[in-house]
Amino acid sequence: MSEEAARDFTRAKSRILQARSLLESRQLDRVGGTLVEAEGYLAKVPGSFTTAAVADVASIRARLAVAVHADEVRKITSILDRDLGCADSSITVDSRHTIELLAHVAEILAADETRRVFAADGIAAYQARVDAIRAKLETIYKQS
Image 1 (cartoon, one colour):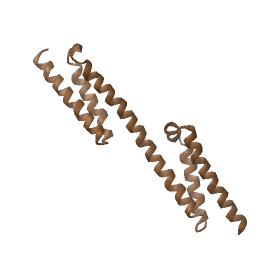
Image 2 (cartoon, one colour):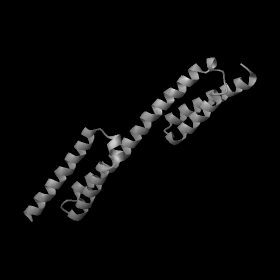
Image 3 (tube, helix red, strand yellow):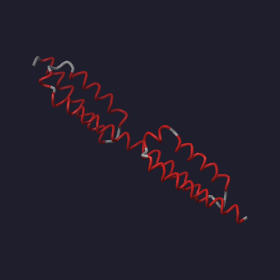
Image 4 (cartoon, helix red, strand yellow):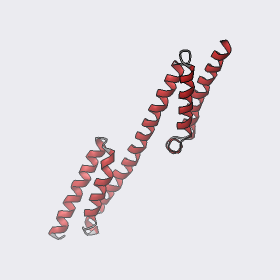
């Protein structure tokens, strides 16, 4: 391997380590670009020297995809849980607010991002919570 190729290989390995560290510290938005840099350096190195490094890049990309998906699920779950909790707790105090929150939850459940991130049974579970709160709301209206 030439000196220049050796330097590029060292730079690539450095970027791979950096990407792994970014992934572990949940700085997910920076991992992809760092891997692209590593791949750029690896492209300048003879293939026989890069097999393990290329496998490392692929492994980090796979872990990144899992981490990004988990963050998306966490973000949507947080919003749904917050809105449903507020809707349920405000039924007797402010039914209009409950209705608005349920409409917001329905929008989120129907969104393409939610359907991409959640399995059908997860969406169904949230829909069941919406239905239960609506039933409580109807019972309250009937009693008043």
